[in-house]
Length: 162
Image (cartoon, rainbow, N blue to C red; front, side):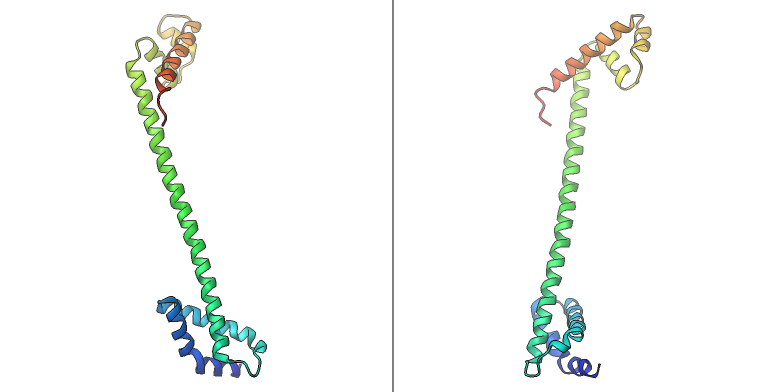
């Protein structure tokens, strides 16, 4: 333990200065320098007697900083993916609203009884039998009228690429 304390006291400021030049951030430099000495503690046995200690510590610091940058890039990439997903969600929401608006335009242009039958079926969620009763017509009439209304909307939407 005494050995690492000596290394720390002797080289901390030089390693810290080296990392500041790499990162241009005191906060990052402080964190990387601390990690460097922690890693040095684990690897101090690997240090050869004739090795340049400062170079060895700088190599550990550089590798630690590179790992830090890689991790930050991954985090930023994930954030970018989230932004892209958010943009796509907004785009999909916009397209959905555009489609709804287009359907409403088609409904507005549609003649009676098609418009009312379609609205009762889709928005009112009534059965064909209930719709037939409202119009004093048969269930089959309601079904045919609904499908004709639906066909008119589909035709109105054909030119739409939303």
